Image (cartoon, rainbow, N blue to C red; front, side, top):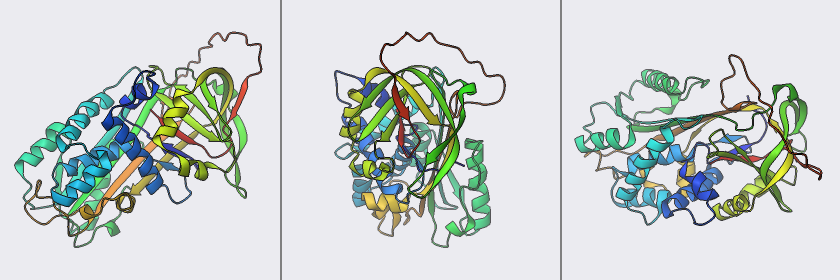
Length: 382
């Protein structure tokens, strides 16, 4: 269990963010920028408890796009505005269809596992065209289930969840989540697997104090290496980019200068600010110390989405006539994301032999920069 306060933003995000944010000649496309803004807003809305939070905004966006395609009226407007205001439903569908395929295709040691499924009340007559669209455009299925039997419902949803992400622990849903009025539940899951381009030497891993808060500290396993990385620093934050094997996807770590300043940093975080930090990074020789950790977190995102402006979808005012002619509203949007960071990469397999290759490091005449992640930080996989 990862006990310290760390936030993961954009986790398992659409790969296009990586190419866009590292591109020196152009700004990200309108939809990509809207999705990045959605990710930041989702973090602000969901991670309100002061606990570690791991989210896959792209996975959540896919799930919302699925129901947006069957929405009408104010319900559609609210969903559309939170996903990409000013963008048509068809443009969103084309965007997600294209990039969903890209994200789910293994790429040079990069693998994302993501699944979304709509569970609806048994015997509801779902429109044939909508069911076909969910299948063809979102690689998903609609599962009919009897919400009047909550024990069976929770068992079936949990069984499906474990079949999608086999290393998840605990139950995704409980019987108490389902009441007589429940007619539709949306589930979104994601995990990520990639190996570092510059792996850590396991022999360098040691125990070190992690400062959770003014009153809490904990001994944790930390990894260490000295190498050249893209790096940024100003008076409030230091940031570093750790490349994965293919060199196209990075873990960006944002470490506040104030040891207990992560909440304050997150409150001021915007897409433009993150983009500026990444664009301003320069190659530097860094002594890097990073905790080895596993994070697993589930959310019922209904309240978070309410705060973001998605209201009607969760109440009797919902208009989902594009998927069903009967009155239908969403009771829950359950999201779970899992990640593990170790010497080999992110959720990289730990079984079997581990080979560490020594890379030649040019001699530097200046002292290395210290990047010691021994207090709450934010990371983003882009």
